[in-house]
Image (cartoon, rainbow, N blue to C red; front, side):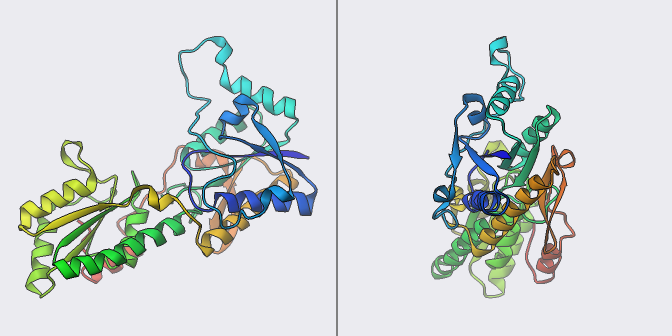
Length: 336
């Protein structure tokens, strides 16, 4: 057998560990040839494909980014273009000419959608969920999430000392356009006093009252953790808007910090390395068994898979009854 493997969408810790898990299992256990497809789905358009060997995999377990490169190419997106730019046909031609029996697609929601369409075109596909946002439907956790939460939590920990020393309100913005998983988990782990998620509406007056009430209790500083995707006025960035509104509501000195792409870089945590390794290995097992059209998923403590067609176009969002939110409210954390 010959399989191709690609990484698409944003980078995150654990991609290389996943590539390693797929390839080592394929080469050492099943005798399957593996080919790396460079720069996501663009590599199938450009026929930019190279063999992967044991030597290619050295040092990947703790390496950030992706050795295959990535892109946000969406080959099935309709565009006004000449017939010569029939991207789906170009990809199918490359797969056929390279005699690839299956394509392993590592990526987030957009990648899962493209992988499902590739499957519908008659290509054998197995996909692996990758996102720091943890918003891919069908899996309890995606690799990259634990690493991002760890980085964000450390940043919040460091802000506590500055906020306490200067008796300020510190607003920290973490990633999460539509899903507030990073804000929720890092906010709770870092002892955030106010945590704002895209899924839960907030009242700026209530936030101001919370900060003032903390002062009355002898707590002259507050930590506010916000997801980048919360609703703001006039299109302002989340941290900037919330900091300005808090300063206006309370008169307290307020500073904002935007964590940004730091959350996506660097080495994966031990949890993500092991999750990526397990997911990569299970993907190869499915291929060896001829079970295609599925996305690898973590269910509880077990690696499983779900039909790829059920995943595409869905988001896994935080619900108001999540146990971390319920426990946070019991402890006096304000969620807006």
